[in-house]
Amino acid sequence: MNFAKTYLELGGQFSPSFIGKKVISDGSIKDFENSSAIIPYLNIGGFHFWGHADFFISIPLAQIPFKKNDSTNFIFNKSVVTGARFLPWAIRENKIRPYVGVNWAIVNFQNKIKPEENQPLLSENKLIFDAGLLYGKSNM
Image 1 (cartoon, one colour):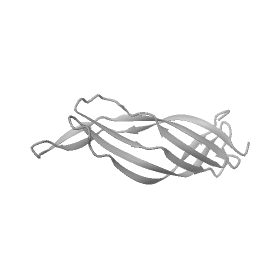
Image 2 (cartoon, rainbow, N blue to C red):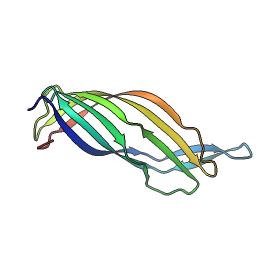
Image 3 (cartoon, rainbow, N blue to C red):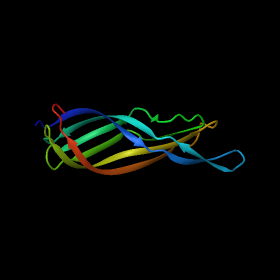
Image 4 (spheres, one colour):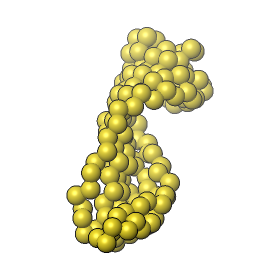
């Protein structure tokens, strides 16, 4: 294995449906349902240190709701994510390898309730710890 190897990956994030609340003009609160959605993303990364470390950025491409709702919509995504993973056993072709990692992201949430489309955008910095398995395919 080389000291460093670059890769591109397409993936996605799933957002389940949820019940939201909105304040209507008379001051009362009304429930509404936000549809589940998928957010496709592009990962650009590189394995370093002979396959023991993975440094990457993850770029969200769009938000695709499963149901169209004419009166409400929402944005719930992570901005560009920067992360690193450590693999105790180096990534190898046709092998599954465990990893632990940490990602830094800004999580964004915004309701889009018609007719008032200018709802506040809530953003929060998050440090996300993760663990999982990677499968090394030929030519990674």
